[in-house]
Image (cartoon, rainbow, N blue to C red; front, side):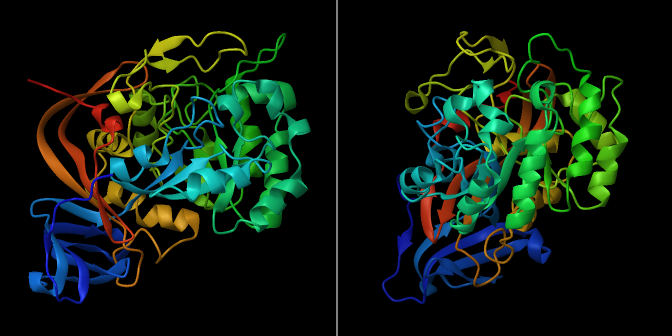
Length: 438
């Protein structure tokens, strides 16, 4: 990764100075043109004017949006072990303007040590995990459904993995979806909750069809939510509110299930988990009902992307109902390549910029139990910053069904500062997203 160009000063008290940007830090209700100084890998000062001579390196970020380092709460970065599903953490992370990524379910209790040694520790990006509810984790991208029943879960092993890796593991990933429900009811989620209550961490629940129903069964998708939601505690997370798949927030009648409102009222959070799930129609239904995501996970994974380093792509999203041994079936729709692409979609759907920034900074820090350490530019916090250009114009966004939405602005990552070190946002994943209108 190439460090961003900067001007050097020999004698100074700061290592890095970001000058003249629009600093938005929702954790401190800050939105103003400010300078941000970093020293020793941490935020040292935020002020209206800090002399350039006070820093060894200065980066001019005038007319740029300067925010706490973005946190992607739903990533898939267990490269190789999860087959083509897992991506390189730095392609999804710092090279895409994101300073922290949370792998959702790639590592299981039996594979967590490898995740730490071969993924989290070598990465430049801060890598955290919600450990899989299943002993094997997300081997080969969850394509072998038989691995993911109650027989593949050991509550004691899950708790042991969490207790021994508190710095890395911030929760448990589980499923509450139609295919699993047709096989095991909600038993796998009950086991996840047993482990989460013992370990005192939240559960992140996938809603919306993932696997096909078991042979010989046919499940009414709208019956799943009433079974899943009552099991959840404050701090747990429901994912994929805008999914195109059945069995989630929006019923076949196009209405949000009443239990979702009750869950949010008692402290259950909502994470976008975009991936191949996005339906603009479902998003409208959820937002018009008054629900807002708490955090934003990009859910970028390798089933949508091929040959990343040379910038080429595969045919599109794969059919989530594929069976083991079958070739993946492309189903089209827009590829998601980065967290910022999802932010563009939320902005085009009408959410205010300050709220969207809060979702990927302050709120994400709360979800991870890391308030004050990340998700803020308060002096003493980790020296993680995302710098984005705000481009005005006209773009066309597309959801996972190919439905289009027009946007009049786009966020474009330029640099990520991770632990006080500056990296260019040059990931080929950033090439996906909005199509500009000529």
